[in-house]
Length: 218
Image 1 (cartoon, rainbow, N blue to C red):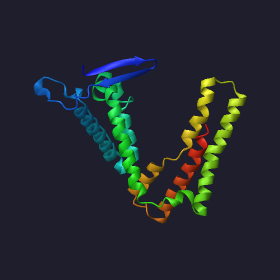
Image 2: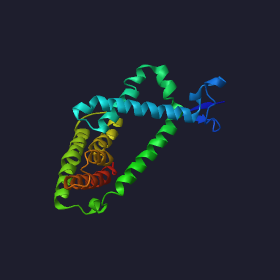
Image 3: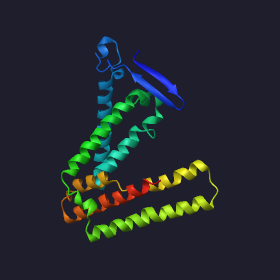
Image 4: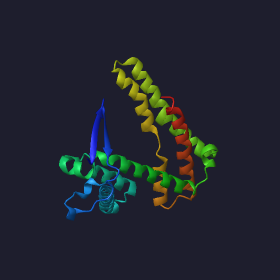
């Protein structure tokens, strides 16, 4: 059996055949997408093509690569490709999610590592006065004040208990600054090692340290 499906409470587990890695192709009368490697290659090709096409279309508008990647994800996600369930299930089946997510995690680790060797990590723990001031302003106006308003709403307004528990986490997660995204934009603009770039790196690193330390409580 190629794939076995088990449903436990609200979770569905897919057990793939570990020997079904490569495929002998259409000539053997088998579907190559049932194998892990051909399916993964097809997914990577489609993701790259979608991002590149969107990037070419948005290049005259001066948009960054990150915007193109986000819109490319929307094209291949439920908003566009998901409108054709049969095609979406064939190209992005649930059994291939683990492999794609694992590869994506490795990609993020390598990307962050490549950024880490280019920067001074002491900026996170010992920022200058300007970076500290900007970070604290972001910390207060984007995290502390919204959290205070959230707690006030929870105490004053009758809402569902499950929604009450998720509100602080939602506010905290939306207030985080994505340091890899900031670093990617700086590298794309070729200002990573300039004075402005170092200031942006110091602010985003120190703010993320403060925000993650605070949201960890919730």
